Image (cartoon, rainbow, N blue to C red; front, side, top):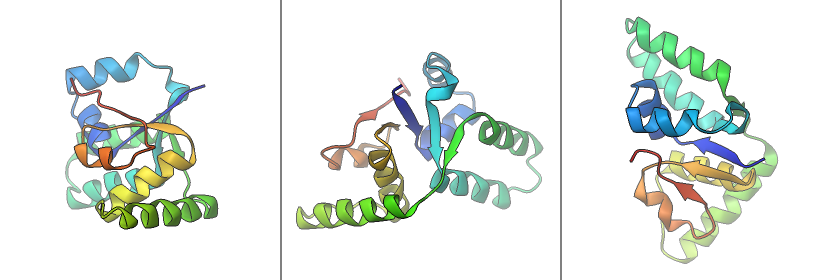
Length: 132
């Protein structure tokens, strides 16, 4: 089964009920969706910044219950080191958390669902933009 890892920006748009994102996401089997534990951390950071946003808290908790949150494992860390070094050799840089999410998607052979063009720098990373 093909896996789709939602980047933080896609998960955020899904939570804010962007019609195009919701339409694309519900079109794939729920079992094929996942997020990195890094994305889960970013979503939980957002909750911590907005403790009174009850609807947001409910939406994030529901998303975290429904999609697989993939753990960061030692093999993922090894993969990240290799990918980061390869990008550095080519003069390419991603923001630190983006690098972790991209390496995680590569490690588990998932398509990264994002509209962040910066991920296009990673030659072997399959990316889909589901915001259109």
